[in-house]
Image (tube, rainbow, N blue to C red; front, side, top):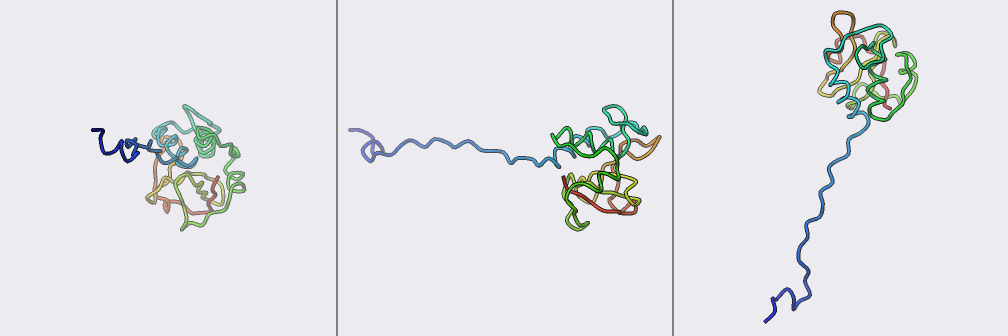
Length: 136
């Protein structure tokens, strides 16, 4: 006698493939920047071995396939404005009236190319005077 499933026309269960959640370009940019923690600071540096603040943002987003402006002032002027309360990983956070750029890393932290002798580091989002934020 054939199996009951054959008699009822049932098909064997085939697992459906699991689709991993897609990362946003901001999340990819943060991963790229995090991989550069400890890299040297250099004025005008655009990576991959030396960065200034806006160069780190531009390089990190390029790793995610997104073109951003080169200077910190232009980075603050572009993108979509984001309130401080709505920051998501990868958002550009601008400080000192637009003179310094960082990437919001989540959990109240930013990744930025700080200064000579410090290089690329992670700091609390509130450690510098906030000027605005943008999403790319």
